[in-house]
Image (cartoon, rainbow, N blue to C red; front, side, top):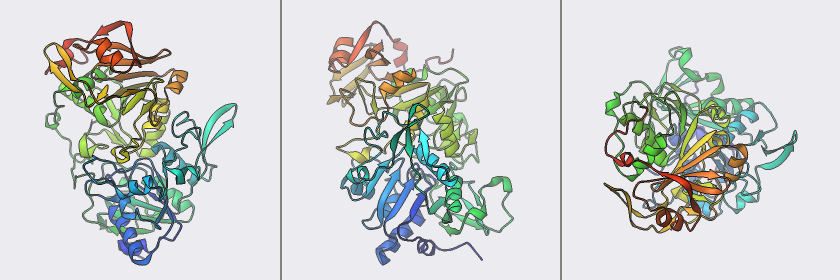
Length: 523
C-alpha cells in the first residue's frame, strides 16, 4: 500500500485532541504545506480541534513561511509549547500565534529547545519525564514563570521543582505526542527519508521514534519521491518503518527567503572570499572585542544578534577555520550565516541532529559561547526572551537557556543604551547624543540567564558593549575595560544610573580596535 498521499488526506487523519510535534526551525525544515492543510481543514470542517502542538525550535517566519500561523485559530489550537516563536520587526503585523498568546486565547509556554528534545527522548523511552538543572533560577523555574507565557499557561503548569539525591532539579512530566510532522528532501515509496537539500537534520528522527513508540501517526513532507531501493542506506536519516504518510510540496523553501542554496546543505563549498565581510561600524567594534576571547583550536557556540558577526571578524583576519563553530540547528564548523539564513552554515564540517547538539551544549563541552542581550540587571541577569510592549520582536529563548546553563564561559554582546547616537572618530567612540534608556536596568523583565546561579557555578561572564567590557563579579557589574574615547563616569556610571561601576585598575582598549583594517587576531 502506497504511503504517498495529499496534504489534505493526511490532515484528515489527525484526530481531535491530538498532541502534534513539528520538526522545524523558523522556515528551515518547516513542513509549511502540511500545516496549511490542517488549518484549511479546520476552516472547512471545524476539525481537528483542541490540538496541543510542540515546536522544539520554531515553525515558520514572518517573511513568507507562515508555519504555525496556519493553525493559530480558536478551537483548533488549545495549547502550544515552543522553543521559539515567529519574530520580526515592528513594521510587520503581529503573527497570529502571538495574538493568541497575548490575548490569552491559548495556553502557551516558552520551553528551552534542548528540554523539548529531551522530553521527546524520554517520552519515547517511557521514562518518567525530564529531570534537569537547565533553567534553574530563570523564567523556566516554577519559582518564576515556569515557562508559562500567559495566564492560561500558568493555570496548567508543565514543570515543577523536586528534590532528588540531595539536590534541586526541575522535572518536566511527559507530554506524549501522538502525531509527528516532519520535513525532508526525498522519500522513497516505503517512506525512507533523506535530507540532501536541507540545511539541518533537526530532530525528525527522535520525533518519529517517539510517536511510533506510542502508536501514533507520522507524516513526512518532502519535495520529491523516488523508487524504493534507490536511496543509499547511509543517506537515510528517518527509516520508512517509522513513517506512515508522505506528502509532496515541490516548492518548499530551504530556509527563510531561500528557495535553495547548495552551500547551505553542504553540496558545494564556497570560496572564503565569497562571504561578505562585516560592515565597519560600532557593532563590528563590539564583535571584534568579543573575538579577542577566542584562541585557535577552540570550539565556540554562537547565537543571534551582534554575536553572529564574530565569525566574520575571523574571516577578515584571514583565519576563517581557526575556530569550530557550533549552532543549535546542528551545523558544526564552516561559516555560520546571518540574516534570513541564520541557523544555517556554509562549508560546514558536519551536521549533527539537534537533540545530540543540545546534549553537547547542556553538558558544557564547548570552550565559549557568544550570545547577545536585550537587557542586563544589577544581579547580572540577562533577558533575551521577552519584551512585554512588543512581544513578537523577540522569538523567545530558543536554545539560549540550554547553552548558558552549562557553559564555562559566556560572552554577551549588546548596546549599553537604546537609541544613543554613537560615532566612530579618530579619537575613539563618541557619544553624540544619549539614548532613550539604558540596557543596564535594576531588574530585567524576564530572567533568561541567572547571574546568581552563574556566580554559584563559577562561570566566567562578560558583557561587551560599545562603551566598555563588563564582568560579573561578587560586587556586581564592573567595567574592567573602557573603549577609547569613552568618559567612564559620564558614559558608563552615570548613564547606567550607577548600576555599572568602573574598576580602579580598568584599562583603555587600543584605538586600533576601531580601525577599518584587520586587527591582527591570533598573532
